[in-house]
Image 1 (cartoon, one colour):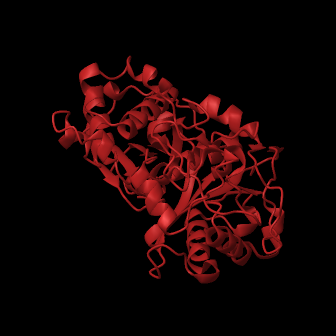
Image 2 (cartoon, helix red, strand yellow; image 1 turned 30 degrees about the vertical axis):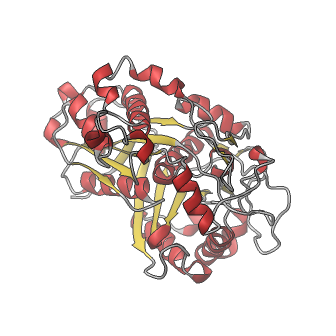
Length: 404
């Protein structure tokens, strides 16, 4: 069995908005959600800026999740709940009419909290610390009895979750899967850890301009927070309930570089292999791709090797394909980035608007692709890919296309 897989609902939360529409409008406008860190005192840290999410998203949860349940959730889990219920609402799905045994939940989660949210031993620290908490809570609240679990593959976690969900539907295990990811890691422990390996920007005097993917002056990524969720559905299920179809997830690849725990494989060879396999899986050729949502972290090696990988896969067409990085505006949301950037890619397909790579003011002469500098662009996009490349050599590429 090899069924088509459609996206019928989406929801997200980022530093640019508590819902998809607000975030999308700010992305189109090229706004930055990066600012001086407010949740903790950053004065002793090398990096003192991040793309934090405020508490306003929790108002949405009061109508969906009981106060007692919310008390047992960390910020990351609550963000996942909010994004997921947005996606469910958008999809107009009624789970009481579905076979609950055939509805799954798969979430990309690196961790649900830092120690500051679970260190109070009287405050539900066991359930708060469960990496599988977002998937479990969604299943419990909605009465869903299909596969329910989390995937942790560093920055590719939620892309792996979406790809796995796609395979569950294609193989006939599930009819519907709620898939996505969440990340809330703006802590002194995380920031110090990334600073030790010189992965993060230290441009504290210019928060909005600090994340500079593909620019010569890039000096590392900026931590972001957020959550993204997609409702994936078989063609039969979507059409039976007359669901609106936002895009088809036509292909994917999940690969391992097996080279280094932090550095990508030299010359982007692993990244190129992942993109090529994803296109082969989708049935599309490189010539048919209209847009690439880059992993685009603003680190020296990622941007260089991802560019080289695109040149390797797309050949002469590489410099004609728009490539942009939303991390320039919302930071690196770690476990959530694959899901959030999938939604951005799908919105691009639906609206014909490509969001920009902001802060692209000093091009790196080594990197010669079309990075959609600074302002959004109108362009018809029928087929697009989104990349997620994580520490440990975990690579994932997803291929989305317009539903006709």
